[in-house]
Length: 400
DNA sequence: AGGTATTCACATGAAACTATTCTCTGAGTTAGG
DNA sequence: TAACTCAGAGAATAGTTTCATGTGAATACCTGT
Image (cartoon, rainbow, N blue to C red):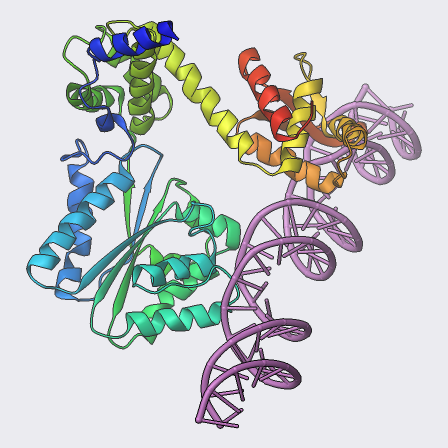
């Protein structure tokens, strides 16, 4: 007990080298967005007519993750809102992330969210979708006003439920008498619009803006600006920022990831009682971030999904690749033994594909000629992660 | 030897089903006048 | 008669199952030399 007490005291007395950690969180909103002036100006040009309540072109924003799309749009919307408020222009802006589970990832829920934004509650289920649309129309068309609707990660939405929703949304304007809606889609899949219904495609991407990835130098600059606010001077080892930027640049210039890494490195350094953040801490941070990502992904999956993953972890300790059929065999035996019901191979195949998508396993579809076609599966996780993952899955599946 | 045709072991798609959670409707019941 | 209760019909959704079709290349099977 005493030990812990002194630990807490020491903790308080030692000044943290963090000045303001919130600067490094993804919720932080910087005053300026470096290297994105051009894109912001362009978007502003496109959206400006909204201030006069004139018809505004729908807009499509492309760019890889961590290239500042979301941030830039939020920034633009915020200033647009400010002006609108000052001049009493009836503009509403809505930002929705279509990937959020149980929030806006289906047609019904998306519209329900919009209605909620307009100040009315919609039950999570029970109503027909048409009804929800009608409520929305009525609410929005009460007076002359402009709606800017930003749909982030719109590719996830169409991947899951098709593009009918987008068709409906783009068509809304012709059914509204007073109000107007302008759609702004954000996607990090550059070729996403290719396999969209041509009608939707043409009306949605009237204007397109591309956010290029940051290069290493730009990320360095961004990191320095953030670090200056987040850390005390002298808290970072020389060369740390450069290394951090290099990590991120390797991953297609993802600034968010770079900032994340820096924060986690700081936390690790702080906990280890070091007085500066070193490159070694950064390496640790990278490992931590990676393993957190994977473990998080695994934990948030359904039971059967975890079961498949668990058998996979159990039986692929050696580097030797394993095939779908073998895994299915092992999996069904395991289920029998532990009283879980067994899924069909069809489903397991889908689960394997999902595991591949999440980056938990590596699965290549190969043809063994006369001996069929199958997935060749390897696990590319580090031993420590595998062990941790096993523990967590055992707990979650109530295995002993 | 060289060229096709087969064939395996799944992959991939589409539709339909199941269980759960939730609303709405309207018949039957209750309580008050 | 108005208010209340409660069962049943109908929706949305996640996770599956069923049925159907697709597929890449190692082999089997020809053919002609």
